[in-house]
Image 1 (spheres, helix red, strand yellow):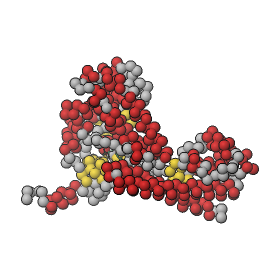
Image 2: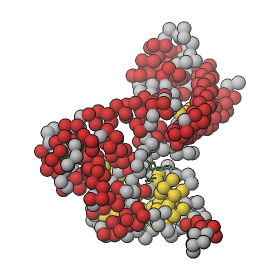
Image 3: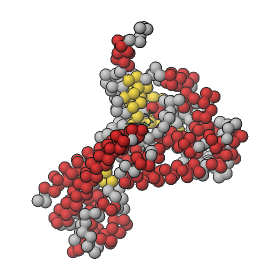
Image 4: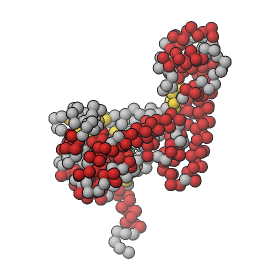
Length: 440
Ligand SMILES: C[S@@+](CC[C@H](N)C(=O)[O-])C[C@H]1O[C@@H](n2cnc3c(N)ncnc32)[C@H](O)[C@@H]1O
């Protein structure tokens, strides 16, 4: 047996790389990270605080090498490492972008650069970074339609809108791509394909940091706010952490400071924003368990599902809700139905004689015990309907996981989303039961 190949040394190696704190397994030895480290060092960045690792819950991310104190700099990435529209304009693409009419968007410039550099392979100076990027993404725009159809309905609509947007982005960029032909020996149609652009779009959408550039005439008027930040973009999201992240004009570095402390060998997180699970899945392709911002959306047809169909004032009530912005974004959360959902239902439950009080309802006033009780009962019915729907969808996804093994990762994502929705609804049902006891 060769030295270091046996079971004991494999176990020792695993022990050495597996941290006790987070279950994270150090991945700094991987060739792509060795190459990236060298690339970053050539650009004057050496990391003392963090190391790439794989974690049981969140996948690949960054782990603290030492304990980190509140306020301490986690990472300070020099401007020379960032990929921005400046990088693109300074490159061989600059002349083509500057002369193209109408001016391309900053997003198109970044995506074009990514596709072109990926195509360049070994010749690309960005290769060490490109090699660390995911090959594929899990945003709904990348999922099979049969998987998208298993998502909650409001999310299906958003996923379809997202797909339509990306498809239009591709078709409307074709002529620009054709103008780049002199740069390539291969037909540009075979380089700038839909799937290549989709990959680039997902790369920017899921990984870019916010970095505002002044508006330039060579670009369209869309805000130029995205920068790709190699290595720093390995930081995963947690809704529970706070960080201070910004480009420092003095040091000319993109800096992230910890707003909470970290023990040695813990996964270090940043917060991508106060996103619910629908927007995390839509924009970043993952679902966060126990996300305090997660909620279950109530579509309009379900809002009125349990109301008496004979209510003559129903249409008027619906238009009042529309006019006052109370028809969308009605939700159940961990702490029960949202105030907006309850208010909308109180208004919908007003009896004929109470109808003139609708303004008071919108201001949060109690109209009558009957109105309070009926609206709570209807809310509970809607909640139960969603609980049943979530259970049915979980069963459906589970069956599909058995049958469509190739889709298992995507289906697991959908399953996690429904499981989280179910937990939220069960919490909401308990809150509602408590509220209802006050009226029995
Ligand atoms: C900026 S990257 C972070 C690094 C990424 N995990 C990687 O391996 O390249 C953002 C992507 O990481 C993943 N991600 C971020 N936070 C996550 C979390 N809390 N749980 C699971 N996946 C997460 C999602 O796929 C997201 O699109």
